Length: 548
Image (cartoon, rainbow, N blue to C red):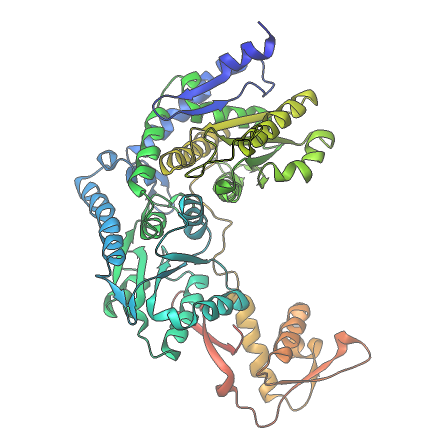
């Protein structure tokens, strides 16, 4: 028996009842490694069990971590929570059914489009779920707005155009005041108003009870409100209404997604590391990165349907693991860098470096056993599926020959149950790995959702000064005049940007040196005509010129 065949049989885990295979045989860890890590693995599994029982994960917030309860409400620590979860789970398919049957409709008739507004985990998870499972014959089309790019938002509004009256807008903001979805929502409201439509009649909200968004949606009688809870983080919200609502509206079997995730959750509660795929995956990350994340994780799904999976894993892993401090407050600067695209595309791109460049990465291949869904290929040999299979296995062999490590996850198909299982596998592996390196996977102190606010406040100061200035000024002079001398660069960029807007109130006197250009307020232009109110933070507003 060859060495590799023997190792494959020992280290290819099969998730019973799901058909998911986790092949670790091409990671070059020694035979004694797993046993040496048993105490640490047992401690990590105990910590995961405590979380599922309702332990507080973030002491400064008093917050539990309960996205696992979304798949198994019976595990929630109180009867009230169990009832809330079950009620929310039932509300999503009921609303989707009413939309699909035209009982709930827009101002111009049955809904035919959905615009999902969210950012970060509020968009990535739903996008992965919807784009991997959507059917070409779906009656309702779906678009995501996950950025505050005015061009992107305008292009979508123009494309939807006259069909806004048949377009449902789903706004997701856990806190209810996250700036990006809030500003995007304001643009959409204007678009509906311009067409004589009532935005509230075309909108649903997913947010925490009592949030600003929830209160507003209730006051204006939006079509529906779906709950989020403090104990569900954005990057782990895909099995809440955040992900399930847009999926259900497209006719995706969301019950199967939940079923697959719940089954994987159950399998990954196993105490024996060798029988627990999430524990084994976390142990591989630990070995490959020497417990410090010293190697990059490259994720290569060999199926177009899973093209977004690397981006999803990137946020889940890097936001959870990238931490300056451990739980004791020691500076550790932990992290695990993730990137990827899809096979076989990247065999003609950066895989060259993975094979022959610096040995600073490991590859995770994601394969699918079934070739395709609903399409009979020509009677040709080799088929497209054969060719894809050959590319994947050939690349695994090529990396092994170069003594480069790889992991392979194989799904039985690309359906909703398999995707749910894959999502749960990574959620739990991240939680277990965080325990191994002693960081809090459920906190994100480095994420600043309102990072634009200081810049927008500075812009407001610049515009107010220029409106009252006795004459043209360059950026350095403006910065000094408003007491922001150390921010002359940003002041210059504000002035240059404002001067280039179509409806600008700012004129420019060019100089021989671009950075010395002088700017002045255009005569006869009233600031009130060209300003818009933009959120600067919770409960505060500033006035800035149009374009934001």
